[in-house]
Structure formats: C-alpha cells, structure tokens
Image (cartoon, rainbow, N blue to C red; front, side):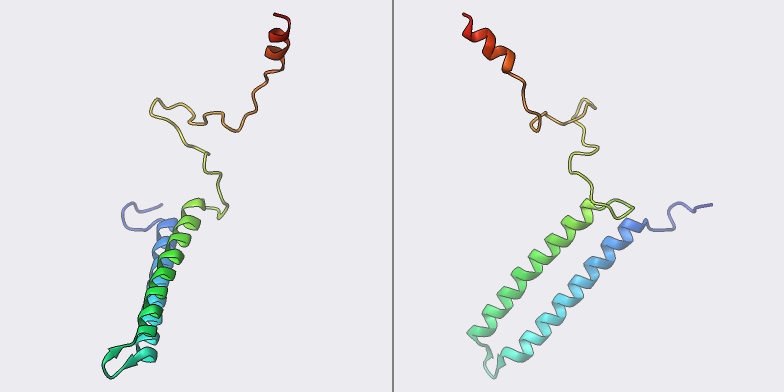
Length: 113
C-alpha cells in the first residue's frame, strides 16, 4: 500500500541528489580557488579567470547531468527522444524525417512523358 503525497518518486529523488552533489562540489571548488588565489588586496587576475572557468564548468556539468537525467527512464535505460512524443492532436509527432521516400516509380513515369 503506497501512501500518496508522502513519498518522493525515485526519479525526483535522484535528480535532487545529483543537483545537491554538483552544487556542493561547486561550492567546494569556489572555496579552494578563493583560498588559493586570494591576495591581500583581494583576488588577482589569475584567480578571476579561475573563478570564471569554474562557473562555466559548473554550467556545463549541471546541463550535462540534467540532460542525462531527463533521458533516463525509471529502469535506467536511455530513451529515444521521440518515444512518446505527440502533437497537439494526440497523434504521433514523428514527421517521417528519418524515412527515405520511395520515388523510383515517379522517375520512371517522368521519363516516359
């Protein structure tokens, strides 16, 4: 018997845990950088570049983790991005872009004219 509203779904808990780990890691990197590159007058130019690089790295890592987590289903398998996608009418949203058109009959008809 599952209690609704009291438990968090497994995927949501995984997303929260990964986000918290990445944020704590980023804060740790910031702490190390500020102690390493701090001077009496503040932060030097090298420290500024290191902080900007760490911020860019954080954005890339968080985006990558979000992409991986959204592509995972409950079993941990990676889904095809078009699985289960529907358009507004409720029909399959696959536009057939991956299908190769069979136009061999059309070419034969055009040459006889």
